[in-house]
Amino acid sequence: MKAITLLPAAEAQVQEMAWGRLVWKASAALGNSASMTVGICEIKPGQANPRHHHPNCSEVLHVLRGTIVHSYGDEEVVMSAGDVITVPPNLNHNARNIGDDTAMLAIAFDSADRRTVGE
Image (cartoon, rainbow, N blue to C red; front, top):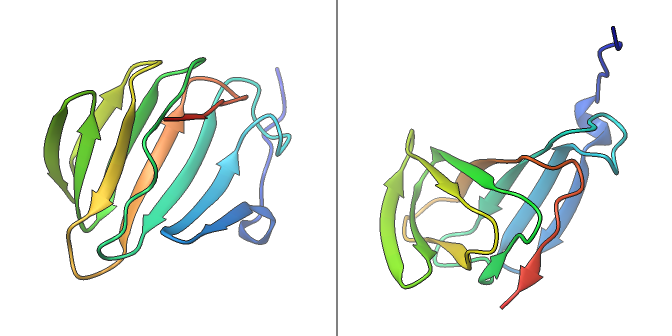
């Protein structure tokens, strides 16, 4: 049986972006997962992350705080705290914060080496 791997909060990988930030908690790059990538996405009010897709994995997005419009393909859905969406590989998508506060999203991928391709 493999040992449990602890990643202290201070060792999470943070990517600051103009629209918000990504905080990576588990992945092959962090050395604490061989099967998943897990993180938190924060989007500032009125901002959106760029449209993109993941060629090698599915994504599960869980809104923890705020209200977003999630665009995927040619469709859009409004999501609020507690809502979850599953995005299959290769589907262009993004999230736009339509609320007044920073939106917080839990994101998980079924690959420890998540790849992202911008549109």
